[in-house]
Image (cartoon, rainbow, N blue to C red):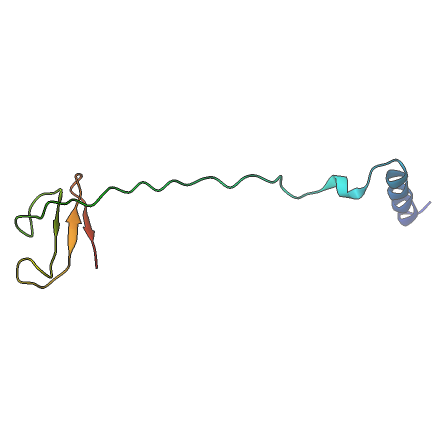
Length: 84
């Protein structure tokens, strides 16, 4: 018996035995997508006394100081978040 006949015979036996080749899938199992929850802190409502004041506070460059530059807020961890 040659190799081709042996393979065809084996496949036929599987199909007749109730198994199919689709049962031997190599696809990874389906998993649910992880849920993501964004945590954002509210912007401070207290204006900064000066542009280099410690936070938490906000600086509105259009209405404060020389009315130029970039607006930002400083959170409780003293991280600066630019708004424009």
